[in-house]
Amino acid sequence: MGILVALLVLSILVFVHELGHFSVAKFFGVRVEVFSIGFGKKLYSKTINNTVWTLSLIPLGGYVQMKGQDDSDPTKVSYDEDSYNVKKPWQKILILLAGPFANFIFAFFLYITIATIGVPKLLPIVGIVSENSPALSIGLKKRDKIVNIDNKAINYWEDIGKAINKSNGDISITIKREDKLLKFIFTPKTIDDSNVFGESIKRKVIGISPLGDNSIKHFGFIDTFIYAFDETQKASVLIFTSLQKLLTGVVGADKVGGVITIVDITAKASSSGLLALLFFTALISVNLGVLNLLPIPALDGGHIMFNIYEIITGRVASEKAMQYITMFGWLILGALMFLGLYNDINRLIG
Image 1 (cartoon, rainbow, N blue to C red):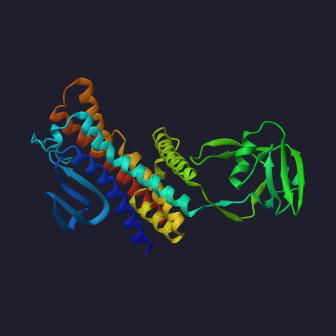
Image 2: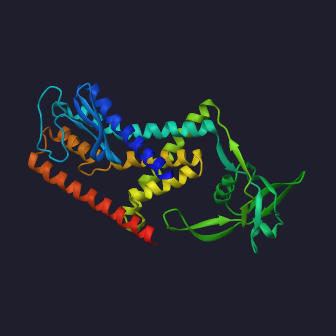
Image 3: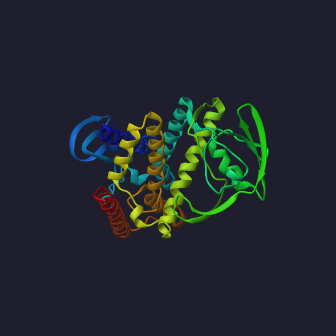
């Protein structure tokens, strides 16, 4: 069941992406010949308003084929009025941007849905106090609730680390124990740690872990949109940063995941509940948008670069150059897909 949900999620994300291209292309009068979800053998197709809508056997991608545009053969062009080729470069760029933009918008609305349902947050209640820790030295105990740090209100567990690592020198902490408020002064401990990318960092800690009690955070009307914007932005920055770390060698190539990993994690997220599935779907939607903006020929970002070149130079790149560059782009994509599949198989075997 989880795998079916994962495939459905991927199909929806592909549909959203291609619908972005389709909508703006139609707005500029471009004929869309094929709108396909999936690859390989056609399971179902129907022609509506000169567009063949297709559902294919392998639901791991999709495409919109516009008149005069063929990634498999960039020399196939058309100069009819309803062709992609006759549109101005800025119009083509908007058509190309529409796919990734649709993924960002879809993620934004998913985060709005999450905020409307309510976001679970860990409460700042102490569970375990570590030995030889600052927390033990000042007498913190299980079930102590942290109220504020350096006079800054602590509402959720995540606020504790932020407050401690922003501080300099000694820290004041106020806790609630039964019905009493107690205040302590202590010096946090600095430890060697690693961030999400495996880089070595210094982090301040006080030596406590959460009890595990949760609270559901609900948002007002305006705060819901602020939350959705912030989460979409954070997801975008995370993925851009991950790509940067991968290119600079900070993150190893063995961390690249393919379709199998995506399906596996999505299936697990679906079994963990609706919120987990929505969070992961939003992240994958942003990921799809970001990756398609990479300046790799055969991706939206590569086509955008061709059009920027035309705007700057006033001329279109030669057909031969576009053919070679596009072939190079397909080689890069093929290599990345093979790497992801190789890593996926290794993880399954391991």
